[in-house]
Length: 117
Figure 1 (tube, rainbow, N blue to C red):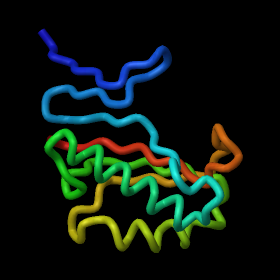
Figure 2 (figure 1 turned 180 degrees about the vertical axis):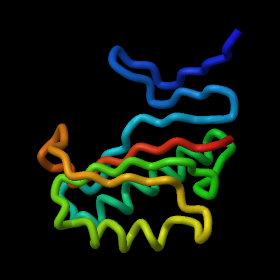
Figure 3 (figure 1 turned 180 degrees about the horizontal axis):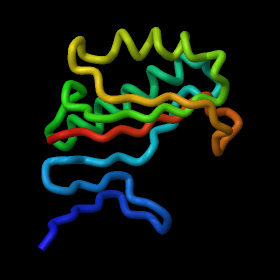
């Protein structure tokens, strides 16, 4: 039997699903920087991710995959400046970054990650 743990279950999604030694997180959006720059929102989100992976006994060096949705691809370099300083050298996850209309017009980006435990 498969042991699937769901954390933060809501009607439409779970905040986190753990299967075996892999943790699948839902998307992260800015919590404290809605009126901030792309760099500020990126730092906000990456801080949330770092806290979340720590809470399950993992860390950012164990990120396996990341998907980044930018409201405007013109902010790619600004976001990457923060991302590059945050990611563990030599431990970067597989990553994709696309432009997309986001759920709230104040969101400049959303990031979803998968991590090993």
